[in-house]
Length: 179
Image 1: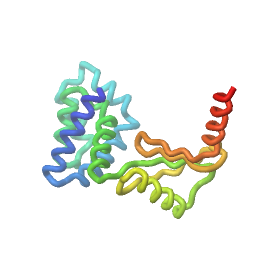
Image 2: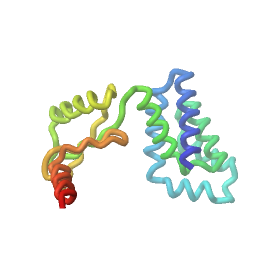
Image 3: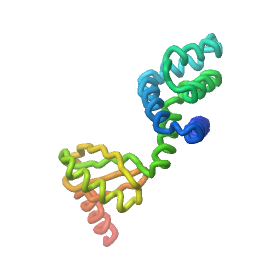
Image 4: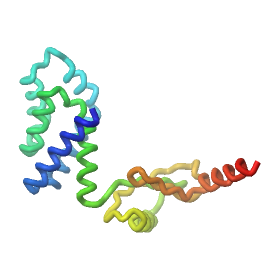
């Protein structure tokens, strides 16, 4: 289903660019995703129920997502027609990836032993921007006591680990190799 989700996301992304509504699309799709995530099991059951004909699935979309822009609504109708409403969160994640790529930005999680101040997060963000070449990072700070000290940051698929836990693990590996 990941390939199908990417195709929906790509089509919506291209339409958003063509119609110059990318930011609006992202905001509205984020709201739709927020509503869909907690109801994903219900959407899956609704999709797979053979009693629900295409008209009733489209009716669900119309009542549930009333007020979204026409391009997003059209995609939701197509998804309903093809019994793909349950993959809405996957489609949003793929769309969000395209949106972030367009703006040269990404999400990052910074793990630390204690909560970092905004000033500290800004400094970490600046250092990560220099290392990754991104224009902007959307940073979330997560507390992880097992790090002992230091920081671990994940940007996309890259991990930058400056924790004491990592340093100790590297020392241990060196000792094992010398045996």
